[in-house]
Image (cartoon, rainbow, N blue to C red; front, side, top):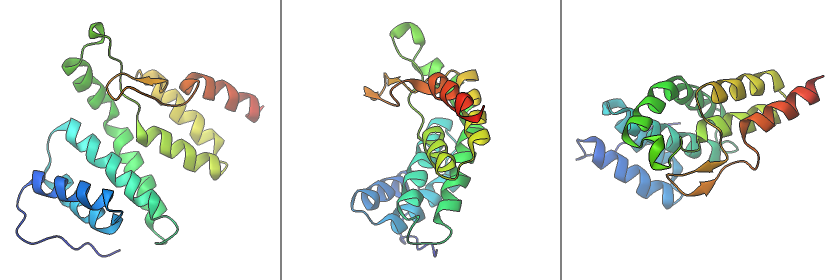
Length: 166
C-alpha cells in the first residue's frame, strides 16, 4: 500500500483532521496515510491511542482489498495494546473513577479478539481477555462515549472460551 501525504500539511492536527475527513468519506487509503503521518509526530498517549484506533478500523475495512491490510490491522492492535497500561493511567487521572467514569471500550482489544476468534486462535483470545481484565477494561459500558461494548464483557468471554477450550 502506497502512502500519499497531502503537501502543505505540517502538523499533527492537520494530518489527524485530514485522516478523519478521509475516513468518513470511506477513502481508507488516504485516512491511513494521514493517520500514519500524525502518529509519527504525536507524543500524547491519548491521541496516540485514538490514532491507533482509526488505523485499526481503516486497515480492517481494507482487509479484503490489500493482502497486507489484515496483518497491519493486527500490528496496530498489538501496538495499541502495548500502550494500554499507560493510557489507562492517563485516562484515570483525567477522568477519575469517582466521577462515574470507567475506562472506555477499547477497539484494539475487541478487534484483535474478533480476528483471532475467526482464525480459531482461542489461546490468544484468552490472553487478550486476561490482559484486559488485569488492566481494568471490562468492555460492557463506555462512560466516555455512552455506548455499550460486548454484552457481557471480557470476564464472561473468558469463561466461555475456557469452556470451549476444555
